Length: 152
Length: 274
Image (cartoon, rainbow over all chains, first blue to last red; front, side):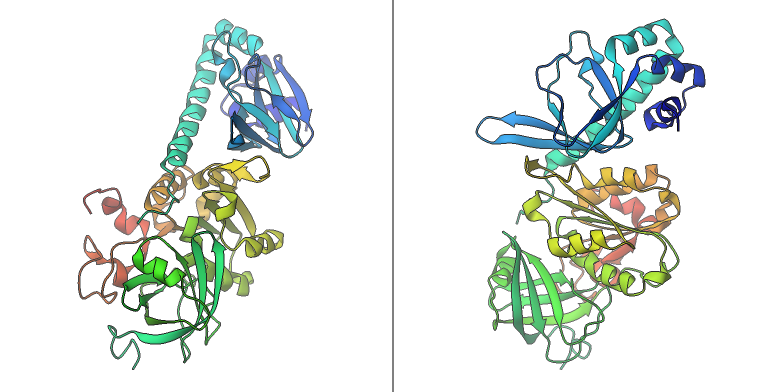
């Protein structure tokens, strides 16, 4: 499968026209991360959206006195990194590959530019991002409820 | 006297083995004295003498006569007393009660078994049953969620099942520290890793909130409500449909459940007053 086909097959690209995928492809590069590689660090410039193709990535937060706490893991078909959405964004978590991982890295400035140039593409991507954000919000809500804690 | 002739009288049974699964969960292997057959998903009433009685699902092999296995979480006074029992200890038992998982009705289907926390215990007999008759079922997915890696139940068995080619096991924990290399997140999120879910049958057991999120996600993934079975919990006393403590709308969880088909309880499942 060509890189273009792999990009088109990613769930985040679902429903986009070929011409729209081609515009996104112009912002994309294929990135490979070995096990334990840090993909981005808290505080660093949020400069990309990653579309994970395979492997697994964990999002971590360093908590003084507790060490690194794993908050969520992401795998093939998921997207990684939302802090780039707003200008001047900085990563708020650390992302580390726990398995050899392959992903398309979409350069944030480029994606912003394509969304501005093409309103239909911008709307489609915005809807996809909102959907992803809502799903993540729902997961965090359930996680926060701590439903497995024993209570009399 | 047995439970069939007098369903309210517990019989004394001896603990053959007490195995600590995690800091607050213990598995008791009991000698019932006579053959006690049960179906996956059924429960017994276990009586800690002088403390009280609680419903606990069987977690062992249905086909293994002469042994009854229960996995118990130390939460209240009775379950804490049961968890303190050691080999040779005695407790009261009556049962089995309740409607089981429909393991025979769903032969030929793909199965998605979703377990949250202690919810894996009532589903373990399902796994024993379907793995013993593997050819009778389609693809089988076991999705397991736990609070932390240390809280995962039946860890050795999960690892064995993961290596078993006929079963896909996906495990996640709500939180973990750096040493954990598995998934982190909630169990409904694992459904995104199950391909072609829409023709499967789902068995779901865990805390009710976890089941609500799971049912919602199964619906989004295209699974019809009549393909979803849940194991519900309510305050049970008699376990035989006499007292009404576990009433759930027109049903009694002890007699008509604990396993119920979702489309039949959908209108009640989201009611907080029930």
